[in-house]
Length: 103
Image (cartoon, rainbow, N blue to C red):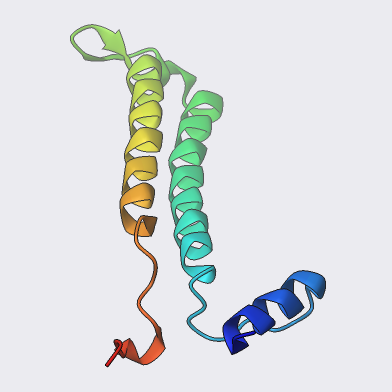
């Protein structure tokens, strides 16, 4: 059994096992949490406008479409964009720590 597979087996059976720095499992989680935070901020802006600036939400902004519809469609587009970027960033495994290749 390799040291990596032994570590994975220990970490699966004991969630308290500390993860090594640069663990490739952490990379997608970091991206996902970062993109989630960006989306939460965008959505919080939408909620802020809906609660405190309701008149502004009814104002036409693009070709007669009101801000609520335009912002809502923008949220959908942002979610799709963030998902595509996430898939692009996480499609390849992380390089090994130290950047060493096989000799």
